[in-house]
Amino acid sequence: MREAISCRNLTKYYGRIVGVCGLDLSIPEGVIFGFLGPNGAGKTTTIKLLAGLSKPSSGKVWIYGREMVFGDHALHSYIGYLPEEPKFYGWMTGREFLEYIGGLFGLRGSGLKKQVEEMIRIAGLEEAADRRIGGYSRGMRQRLGVAQALMNRPPLLLLDEPCSALDPIGRKEILDMIANLKGQATVFMSTHILSDVERVCDMVGIIDRGRLLVQASVDELRERYAKPVFLVHFESDDGMLNSLADRLSKLPWINRVEVGKGSLRIMVEDVGIAKKELPNLVASSGLIVLRYELLHPTLEEIFVGLVGGEG
Image: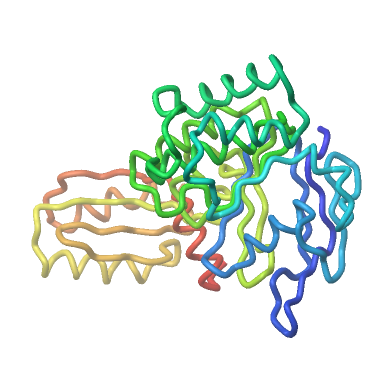
């Protein structure tokens, strides 16, 4: 599969401060890639390097097989970019702003008008297109920002924290918009919101303190790093519950037991043994079981384990 983004040993220093260190990425064409990390991990620095907006201290970036060189604008037509805090001319309407952006890309006449109408439709701004941007909500401005990044129909879209500080409705609107781009463009989306990645992304990269910890599909991450978890709810009896937790935590095939209100969360090393042995152990405790289930491991558990130093 053709690579949309490739970088090797990409490094950026700000004086003595490391922004990104030795970053290697290989992202195939057409995927939605979630670049995940805590605040200050190096996500924005990476996006600026990929976009050619910042000069690397060392290492190289290739966009669709062509090397990105700082100051060379040849590749900019391949890239649509949404910064973390996009700025707009508040006195313009949404339509006027998109016309302005289209003009910067050389669009004119009927071609410009057609593209503007298409972007208004994609952004879901039909009713607000002729209102001033200064009166837009944060979610509407973010959707307009994604629309302007798509004005030249770039094959690669770089989105820096597109859902940051949005309310649930605004987040849903942006995520739906990104999901609808699948197959039309390669999307590189930085975020620290784990549920957003699980919802729309095909692949994930986790970065912390400027270093890439892992890159894989969400399913591969679950298989590789997440511990299987059994959740058991009981009719509460705190004394017997704590006694059962102590017994289980001493078994070699159980990793950890967390006691909740009337429940046990049991992380196991060997799910095969757990499926055979755990029901009998729970039944022999004398507690009344209300619910017993094997949970799918979450990206949050993997993320906390890797960034927290447990991975």
